[in-house]
Amino acid sequence: MVEEVKLKRTLKEYFGYDSFRPQQENIIRSVFEGNDNLVIMPTGGGKSICFQLPALLLPGITIVISPLIALMKDQVDGLTANGIPAAFLNSSQQEKEQQEIFRKIELNEIKLLYVAPESLQYIDAVFSAGNISLIAIDEAHCISSWGHDFRPAYTQLGYLKNRHPQTPMIALTATADKATRQDICDQLNIPYATHHISSFDRKNLSLDVRPGNKKFEQILVFLKGRRGESGIIYCLSRKNTEELAAKLKAKGYEAEAYHAGLSHSDRISIQENFINDKLEIICATIAFGMGIDKSNVRWVIHYNMPKNLEGYYQEIGRAGRDGLPSSTLLFHSYADVVQLQKFAEGSGNAEVQLAKLERMKQYSEALTCRRRILLSYFGEIIPRDCGNCDVCKNPPEFFDGTILAQKALSTIYRLREQEPISMVIDVLRGAQNAQVLEKGFQNLKTYGISQDVSWRDWQQYMIQLINQGYVEIAFHDQNKLKLTSLAKNVLFDHQKVLLAEVTQAEIKKSPVVAEKASENTLFERLRQLRLELAREEGIPAYLIFNDATL
Ligand code: ADP
Ligand code: MG
Picture 1 (cartoon, protein in one colour):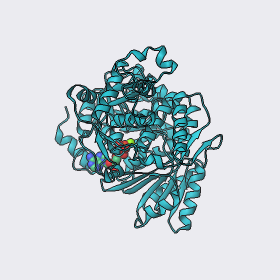
Picture 2 (cartoon, rainbow, N blue to C red):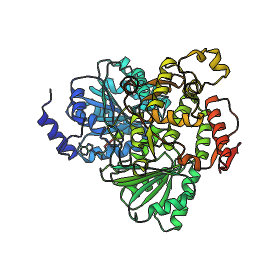
Picture 3 (cartoon, rainbow, N blue to C red):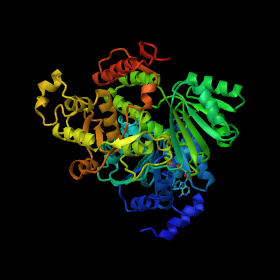
Picture 4 (tube, protein in one colour):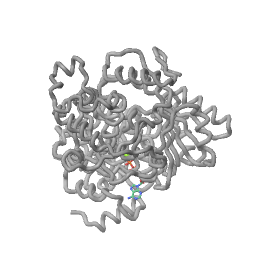
């Protein structure tokens, strides 16, 4: 067992910190106990120390699998500068360089060895050359096609545990949804891993969502009084990043575009200028940020909608790592949603991607505390509304929705938690369509119990119930609605549920876009509904065919 004093001393000596952050010490202890570990901690939470510090104290080498070759050198340089013997192996190196590293491995002169998943062919040689104490899989969500950044090369990592069952493994990621967590452990063959799940609440980040019209004008207003602060604007396309950077430059801001189409040297120099506060604003695609360690990013804007909440949370998480108040702003637009739907439909995993996008959209349209929604998505329930999001600061009207909630929850219960949102609403409203009748749902006790509430309003209430944590969507099981433990309090103990008045909702005021018919019935239905409702209310609504740009 390692003594506390020794851990603290190492932390101070090599990393310069006086104390551990929550969880770090527990995780490190568990590593020393020889367990496999799964670490879920938000971006900026301090995952690296959980394997870097043990690496220093363990007798042999710690192998770190890390996805980004481009960042490996920086990481290793950073460690070496702190006096930590580290090296990396990847395909960009000359043979001579690699031989030198192997020599050091044999002499046990290296403590941390970074390896790209594409370079797994070296692993066996490393194992036979050196004494391996620990395998760390950084950004472990890349192994799961359910995660938001799947990398095929990661799928080969399952073999490590089969081949070297005695070597403890630590897998780390900021992606926390339950299904992805399980998938990571399955694929890495670490069924008995100890799970360490940190709070995802980043209280210092304010959350703000606004309709995405006149975005550039809104950005200029946002930037007033923020001269000299560092910020990132995330865009969906390379073209957007360049246009936006040019427009900002024309207004006198120091801004640069950053995307995977730039040369390596350009990217490095932009990153460095940004990190050294020589560049205020980076207009980037999501290619920017993974592994970038800059503590004083004061704001993050999403010029376009991200494709899911994991990505969104990770990106806004790059702001305020120093713990100081920082702002985030998301522009919500149906044109983006339409485009993202197309991407999702064309992906290998359309059903899951579409469901995740739907949650992203629900977040943007939320009428309840946004932080609750975000955190409940990651399986965390906070005791009260956050007070630091736009909904909390400017709340809609609430009413006692306990009876409505009870009707919905008991319908989900009677449907044995086997149906998606649309069927639950159909049953509540007593719909006579073929699907309802075929399944015999007209005989359920709650059939037609709430015809007085329109389909659209029900949809909003259901989303609120999901967002407030009473109901979960089983993405990996046909989007069936499931009751959470909170639901029982409402059903059996009559716990009061507050719902936001939807007829006042801002949603009704924004222009609505719907897309051409597609195979996907749930989304198709929502689109049609939006279009119809918008037109009924005299709101300009558009049908978009092939071109999603408005
Ligand atoms: P993650 O990999 O979880 O995104 P990092 O390991 O890159 O996070 O750490 C994020 C930042 O937090 C870094 O600047 C790191 O030096 C700092 N950090 C980590 N642990 C501590 C600690 N115990 N005390 C102070 N700062 C810390
Ligand atoms: Mg990290």
